[in-house]
Image (cartoon, rainbow, N blue to C red):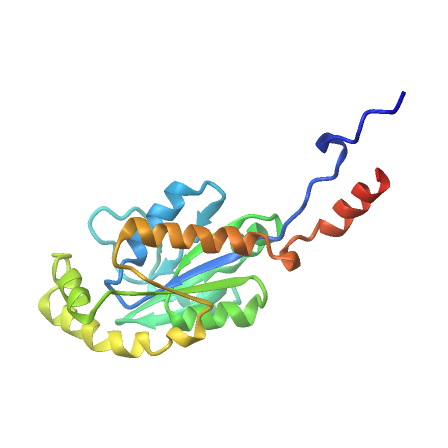
Length: 220
């Protein structure tokens, strides 16, 4: 009688290093909406909560949407090395706390980032190989302007400033690994999920692959 074949319970877990999933776009291209949809659709990824010096918008909650801090606290975090990346955007500072992100990646958890091209560059410098960058484009300039006007949160002069900055932001699209044109939310989310699924399977991220294969070969 032959012995029972090795089951999956006999195999070591296939360990994987987490990844940093970066979404960038000009303001109004939909990255906040797409981020929320992706988080709702995939339990395996968590949002990185940035620190910022701007004031909360209606409905935002400290510690969930952002960590709201004053200029002095932000400077302390930046100068002590407590931020993986930071940038000044429209008169306010934004940054990513280092400790939580590094612990998540080491534990095999994926982290989603809603940051601009400056932050994406800094993350890539600090954690090369862990970052997957996606640039989101609006279907047209006219659609982008209409989305900004429909927010009903920013005064006209702020909308004008954001439109003026959009061209400069879009000029960095070629620095990204993927580009998604956000014309339809469902289609865009499907694209983002496909990218995430493929990146999770990259051999370089499967830190436990060698041990997994060795155990498998023992049973052959």
